[in-house]
Each structure stands twice: as structure tokens, then as C-alpha cells.
Length: 288
Image 1 (cartoon, rainbow, N blue to C red):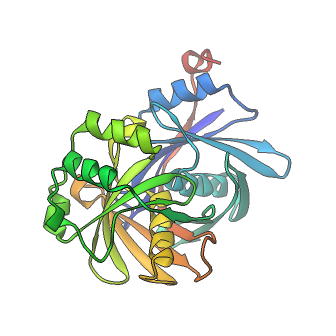
Image 2: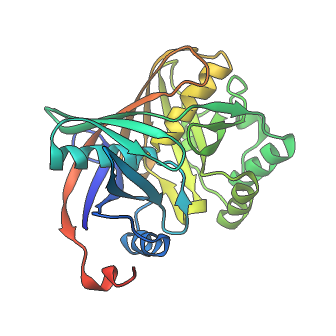
């Protein structure tokens, strides 16, 4: 088993969201994967092993398994490309088959995938109020044109849109209180966004459920945002650029493209900076 470390959705070779990608010859036990994810300490580690003509993949945060993770999928695509060449690789996640394409550009490795199907649901007023309280947000600080919703493209995310980029930059939250709301709603993250234009959004993604204060780039949430915009008729199709991680000092860029057909998967792409790989040592292997 070889563990690679890479930053997905990096911008000009800098920033991005660190992910672990473990290339395994066989399936590992859940306890081993959870222990390794906790040891690595990134927001997610993707564990892959060959299964027929595809690759079986599972995603683990330091505290929990995640049904789908966009940035770790982008990182996995680049690592598969590094090992086996450019082209398409079919990933079998817990939810759906997700094709990922690895390619090269002047900046280095790139990857893109098509997300699982999307859907959007109402959030109860009580949950919206509790989420606002967690972040210390007044009702008039929210963007009325982008109402709070639960959105999904493989995992649940709650969307909170703010009127001010400055307010987004000052995000802070009550960790334990938000964790409780996330557990009640089965949320992966809360996605806070500021709409700069119809095509450009700034985002921040607290990830208390996974034991991480904030994610610098969240591909699954980006796909869910596109589904949300489509479902609410705000932007029925087209392209988006999502800038995330700036306020953490890890600027990330997520490129999004989607069609008008409701529920269909969203195309997510980004640059990947690969830091290298190493064989896991005996201490870690002994967990299995």
C-alpha cells in the first residue's frame, strides 16, 4: 500500500486542499482506514483498490467515513494518472459510479469528475435559525436572493449565502453547537458563500462533522451548489468558478460546469499539486 499526499484545486501550484490517496492491492478493514485517516490528519483520505475494471474507493475523515468527497476524488484522479497515465478511471463509491479523468496541463496534473446526482431540499426555519446562531449571523446579513437550503451531490450540505464578502472573511462558529446541528441533519459541511457575480462565488466550508474546523476546497459542495442554482432557477446551466480557502491562506479554485436537466451530475475540475508518496510503515499496517 502506498500513500500519496496531494493538494486538490490548487491555484498556480499553490494552496488547494490537502488529501491523502492510498493505493491498495486489496480492501482494508474500516478500522484500518479510519485509523490511517486519523493519523494522516487531512480532512479526507481516499482509499482505492482495483475491483474488476474499476477502482473501489472509500473516503475517511479523521473522525468518520464520508459517502463522497470531491477534493479527494480530484486528488485520486491525478494519482491514478501519475501511476497509470492520462485517461479516464471509473471509481465505485459507496453511492454511485463516478468517472474521473486525469490530464496534464502547463500547470501540472489536472483532474475532473462527474458528480453523483444532485437534489435540493427545504431547511426548516428552526434549523436555519440555529445555523445562523452558530455563526453569529443576523437575518439581514443573509443574501435574500440565495435562500438557505439543504443541497446534495453525494453528501448533504447546508447552504448559507451572505451579502458581504467581508462578513464571509470573518467567519467563526461555535464548534460543538454546529456539530450537533450537523448530526441532526446528517450534514457533511455547511457551505457559506458570497456571490461576486453570476459566474463567481467565494466559499467557506466548516467541517466539524469530520473533526476539521474548515475545508479549504470542497468539490462535493461545489457540485451541490450548482444543483441548487439549477433547482431554484437562479442559474439553470453554465459554468462557475468557486474561490475557496483564501481566508485560510490556501487559495483554491474549483471549476464547475453543468447542464439544465435537473438532478444530473455536475462536472467538477481542478488543478492538483502532488507532493509525493511513500510506503506505509509497519506500525500503521499493523492496525489491519
